[in-house]
Amino acid sequence: MPMRPDGFQEEPLWDEYQWEFHLNEIEKKSEQLRKFITSDPFSNRPRWVSLIEENRDKSDAVDAYIEEELLLDEAYYPDEEDWDEEEDSEEEDDFFLRGSESFDQDLSFAEEDEEEDDFESGEEWKSLSEEYAMSNSGSLENLSIYMRTRQLTIDLLHWADAQERISLPDTVHDLLEASLRIGAKLAGGYSFGFDPDLIGGNIVYTKKALNSANHALIRLQELKKSGLMSPSVYITFYSELFEIRNDIGVYVQLLREKFRFGVE
Image 1 (cartoon, one colour):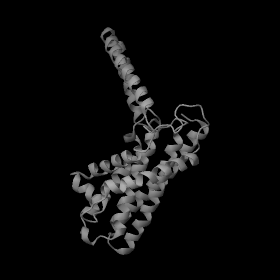
Image 2 (image 1 turned 180 degrees about the vertical axis):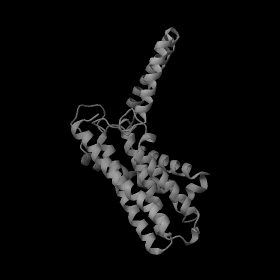
Image 3 (image 1 turned 90 degrees about the vertical axis):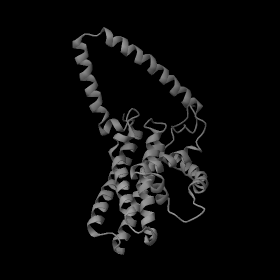
Image 4 (image 1 turned 30 degrees about the vertical axis):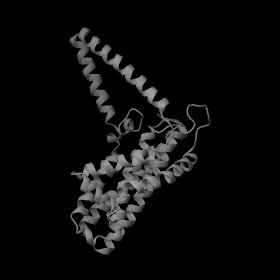
């Protein structure tokens, strides 16, 4: 989890523009490390090619890219010892809670079991909702915009892998890099969470995902003109990417409302 830039001191909350300056500086520092780690000294293979060669499934390739990007960015965050101590404390609390739940269950009657089942069903339904996904208790896998982006990138990798790589123009490589970056930035933003003092970082990363989506749309249009992609395939990819781009824009506005009005 990213660290608050000012630790736990009582300071005015950063807005998204202060966060943007801060995170852009971090990206500048991580760019050199990124080039060093992801470069190929023996060829000019695009990054997506290395990913699919190193990972059997295209979904694993996408996940590996996102994990790598998150690690590269986090390399320049401040020390997180305070967060680790807090998480350790929460884990200890969870241990005792698990024990108490087990003890209570042994003493419960059948009627209480039924009520608990109803409660758990309700909690499971809530955890799958989009509103719940936009909270610190949610999960990235339940954020539909992220999962749709992930699937689109997987489909694009399948399409590109079926082509003659040696003849692929830079437009294809740029398209795939941009698509991969959309998911990475959405995941990076989500890692900040939704607390008032950190949600600005979430907004900035989500805006970066929006920029990558716009870049991918431009590259996709260029591919249409080149004739490399069939009209039917182009329409499928473009319509999905267009909707994803628009939904990310809406997501940015929702995050801004959470920051402005403290919506939980």
